[in-house]
Figure 1 (cartoon, rainbow, N blue to C red):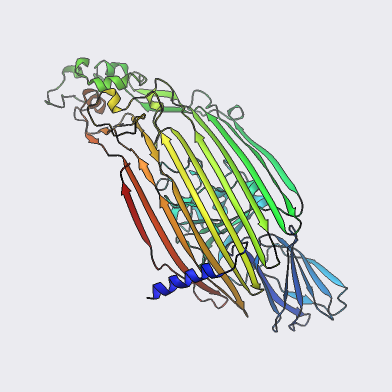
Figure 2: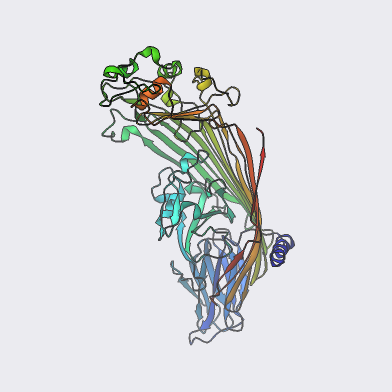
Amino acid sequence: MRSCRIACATLFLLLGCRLQLRAQLTSAMISGQITDTTKSVISGAEIVAVDVATGATYKVTSSADGSYVFTNLAPDTYRLTVTMAGFQSNTQENLILGVGQHVTADVALRVGSMEQNVVVQASAAAVNLQSPTVSTVIDNKMTQQLPLNGRNVLQLAQLAPESGVTSPGPYNQAASRPDLANAYVGVSGGRGDSTAFYLDGALNEDVLTQIANVFPNPDAIQEFSLDTSTFSAKFAGLGGGVMNVVTRGGGNQFHGTAFEFLRNSVLNGRNYFAPAQDGLKRNQFGGTIGGPIRKDKAFAFFSYQRTTVRQNPINSTTVLTQDQRDGDFSGSAKQLVNPTTGVPYAGNQISPSTFDPIAQGLLALLPVGAPGTGLVFYTSRLEQNSNQFVTRIDVAPTDKLHLYASYLYDKLDEPNTAVAGNILTAGTSSGSGPVANWLSQFAVLNTTYNFSPRLTSALVGSMSRRTNLASSAPGFPGWSELGAQIPNLVAPGHTALSLGITNYFSLSWTGVYRIPATEGGISNQWTWVRGNHTFEFGGDILWSKVIKAQDYEGNGAYTFSNSLSGDNALDFLLGAPSQFIQQASFYVVPTRMLPAAYRSRYVAREPAARAYPWSAVEPVRSGL
């Protein structure tokens, strides 16, 4: 019954509040106390905070104990002015608020005329005396000026104390985007999938692997924070850190940028072990523009980035030598035997007439290995083309109501680059098809309403989606096409092949591999300030769905690893596998709905709590 009450209360909060703009997950706060030079409190003073970029103005009055608070402020630079009859006015310039920050700004007024104004420069390192959260803020200047491999801002999270790179192994699925492979960040020794990633107040994650979805390019980001300890219960965290990113918005002045970043092998040194340059050519170019739609009321921002990569990496593996293809295994120190009869081969010489025709058909598509070692160097091609669009609209119809919406579109294409006649270039390390594309999208509508300077509420609706489609390269046969008498369960028009030869080479690709993953939800956050205490409470409903449609190993997977003849390559030539696996094509749709409620109180240092009334995963299965 208690869980039901919590869930019902959550739904009431979600549906009963009025619409608004900045989510309280990304908003900042200013609080402090107004006194005179003798430290006596001043009540009734008027405090005005002005967003320098947009002109948004907020007014409050100090209470009986001289305290004041501004909640739900956008991360930006502010001007704070305090006036009171009988005292000189006081203005603090360049008061910088980071994402999620709670800044304390106490002001001491001097006796005098209000026309006399004392102007001070606010400290860049304002102290947070209200929250125990350990947080590191990376601002726009850092995101644009620090070197980034691929302009991926997720790498900057590694600058925060207690954070570090984690191995991509457990999370780098075939459906994961290759351009995110170097952006797995753990906190305090935690796993990379224990960090929660928020964009504009909503989760932006790949729900399949619980790692980050694509984030905007550095020029489209205002700033972000990484909370590494004691973060608020309003974040649906996973036990690790919380990365909280805010996109840039327009202001009262038009502004824009243009950029291009270049990497070219002509400017690079050659790998010592490579016979030639890898031909790398990577270009990242684009620009941003932002400005007013209506002065002080509505603003727009747009960003575009295109990335092209061309590279000819040199790979190496061990294949069969010409002697081994001819049946001459005399170079082996072991006595080789017939895997069926156990009879030794005299001089380790095997008649090619006993070789399996399927193995010989595959050998015709393989390069010949160097004498004695079987080592072969071959050039593959990498080609990637991606386009990213980011847009944001901010609207403030009234002084109390604020709205914004942002949208991110990022598509990455990898066309067919297999080299005709070389089957080593037809597979991928992940086992999916080499012809692939990924599409990442994120959309959020964020509304905020200020009932009073001490009571605000935010309602956020969002969607984060990552889709992946991979298929086999045309022109290369699967096992059925090579003559294997096994059922072909691969999608029509495609081939699949999986082969592993221990101490030699391996091949793997899938006919069709499609895994779209979608996560979305609605959340409501409330902030209520009473005296020296700040209360936060609210709830959210998170929904996710993953479609797994693939014919992985639909045409079988052969493994040669037990050296039945004494050499795994000879096992392959004779058609004597150690293992054969075949799977039927499958279509699985796991879904989840997760409602939650939270509450927290600061200053009194009462622990926060977050409750999950239900957490159910319902897989739905049907035929492909």
